[in-house]
Image 1 (cartoon, rainbow, N blue to C red):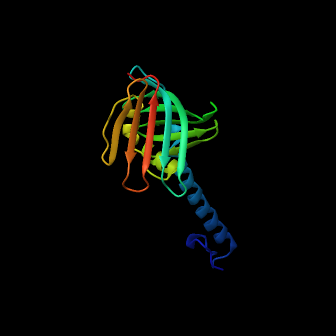
Image 2 (tube, rainbow, N blue to C red):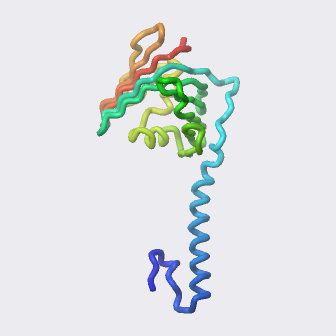
Image 3 (cartoon, one colour):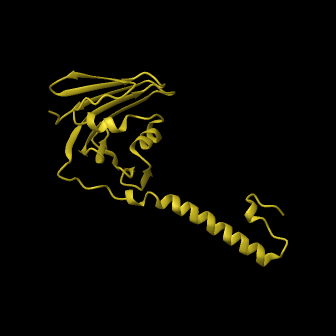
Length: 186
């Protein structure tokens, strides 16, 4: 009898050897899965704000010209630092949709206070959520009203009071249009 995974094939040396091989193989497989899961354990709890944290809040409109077109309109509040942050996202009705946090060691999202999904970086998390990479590092600056340029993106200030920023990316496809209305930016 042949098995799908070579090290789980039944042995010609009898049932005892076959069971040992199967148990060993399953143990290795489970260990590999556990190691992958454990790599994001440090992200299970959100980071704490520090004296370097900047409080951010506002509204966001994100249009991604994918098939089908994605349109996200959310409010947000939280804090950001140069290399970490925590943002809570709210639906137009005011209901909390998700909480996202990140640091130099990865990023995580918790939706509706359910289990935490870990990602290697904020850029990876944005790609998993939207199907395309958003300029994660600059987005943190943009939520503070800083016009940090990003290659491939055009960025402009649409209004001063309240501060409204628009970022557009045409290439690579899909085209993206992001508008941020910042409530507490100077």
